Image 1 (cartoon, rainbow, N blue to C red):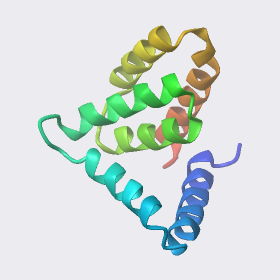
Image 2: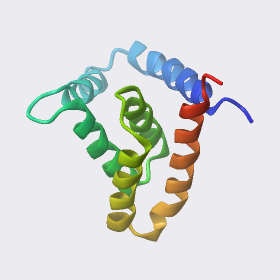
Image 3: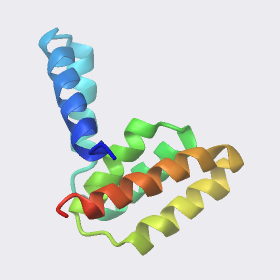
Length: 116
């Protein structure tokens, strides 16, 4: 199986560089706002990542789900915590979220196995 974690991160980095190279103030401000929104505040980073993950799943954004899964993994969230959040996302989003749930589980597994 291909390394989906590396492929995703390489593609995301390459395309973000291209997007930001256009020097579009609106896009740069959105990127900055996104970065700042997930910083610790009244809510800690782990909680914000779970919120982002749930919203991404309900909105059915696989790239967003992968981003939040990886950040959650790097922040030390457990599979059980992530699974519980994805359960809420599936409840709220309905059965249409299930294909994204499958890919989320696949990506989490890849994160866990990336150093093997």
